[in-house]
Amino acid sequence: MKHSVIFLLLISVAFGACMRNEYLVESDYSYAGSFKNYKTFDFMTEIGANKDSVNQRAAIQDAIQRRMELQGYKHNANRPDLLVSFKMFYGDFDFYGYNQPDFENWLVYENEEEVYDPVTYDMYEGTIIVILWDRKKRRVVWQGYATTMFGNPYQNEKYIKWAVRSIFDQYRIFGEDLTVQNRLN
Image (cartoon, rainbow, N blue to C red):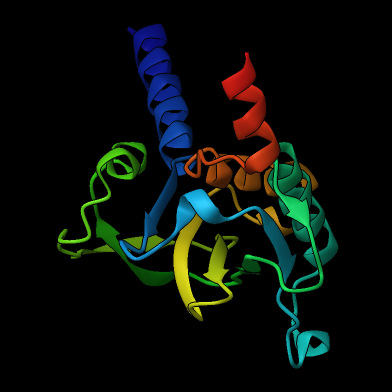
């Protein structure tokens, strides 16, 4: 009997630990985005970035740049198609996104008549948000976000790489070079 109680206690502790390691990775997009036309990107210049408390700012930007280039986008500081911004948060907060049709399916049909269906997410310390801006239209066209309850994730470069990779797994659009290469194969 004593062993059964200890076994149940261990299972409940393990289950509780798993529950604390939950994560959310989501994205939403603008129905007005010209996603098939984007080929280049650059990072937004931030006013007051030196006041930002993000210790891993360079690691996040590096991970984003690597992923954008892996997906075939060219870094271009002169008149890029997309401007990229990002932020890591140091506290819990509510975030407002949208329930939308699957991004890839929407790209096939591009129905701009779709309705934005708001949804609220609980975000936790260490949340990373990546925002893609259409430079010409001067508007956000896509945003992806990853949050977890791992505790102190902003001091963990592996978490940053996981979060950026997971966010861009939601953005399955490739730049011109890969599109052309895929058509030839």
